[in-house]
Length: 381
Ligand SMILES: Cc1ncc(COP(=O)(O)O)c(C=O)c1O
Image (cartoon, rainbow, N blue to C red; front, side):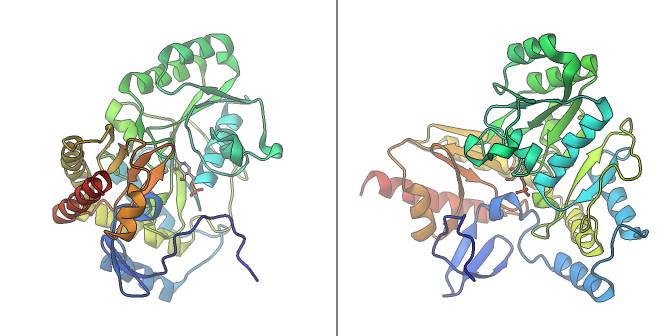
């Protein structure tokens, strides 16, 4: 059988990894400044993570959501404490798209409304409602097309106000990434987030903070939306939550009430996924990784901003976008194949850095050295 060929792949065979480093089957070492799409939060193969997952696997790997699992409650308590949302409720699932799908569905159940406000540049996943709220017609299949999703310009307070003025009583939810990831690392302004909160309150709509990429401490606060001092009604989390183990969830404000059968999943919240998520939170806490993301990220952005030929550096914490001029289209490839550095990209010419939150200062310095070398060589071939 062939693999269904949907991914443009680099010709690299990854074999093993540790911390911020991965090795290919030929023994070449790469600095991982991308964390496999922002997934590696505490570093590859962290010993505490490996120990906790292995111990859980020896006990029990899976049982369904038809019995009580104390490890789910343990995770809910720990996540409430570390995220600063102890009074929220947790629904566990398996991926970012599934988390957003459930968040939107819950908002519609709670308000008995159908309309969703999303923003230009947004990416919320590939399942039906999540993809309908994603601003990329290429990945929206005809069956997912709907006129229930209204797309507004990002960070445009006036457009938001006029949308609510016209159809506020029909809006079930506003869904927004605190920092757009796929959209090119674009930070939502504090004023914009505060306005969403005010308008949702005034019109009875649900504020969904998609924190799949920008959450879990990556921005230097647990949720990127926290920088604005704004509380959402639902936070969706995935990616960094399991450091590679597929686990996701939505954190739900106390005013949104559940009923039996409202949401559900087979795999979500299984004991192995919970063990992975607990290990991640324990390491985030014990190693002060959110503080590290804040300070190291700021240092790295300051250094990057001082370099020539860089058009703009955007982001918060260890979620960094570097706008490259069009004259440097091959820079990311050169970083990978000449300097052994994994990075990400966003259209049209943005280099995305999403390393582990445990990245060390000396690794960030090494990245800068390699980045400068490629920048210089590309300009002076
Ligand atoms: C902001 C955001 N939301 C949702 C998703 C979808 O997550 P998943 O690929 O786990 O379904 C992504 C994935 O990149 C994302 O960046």
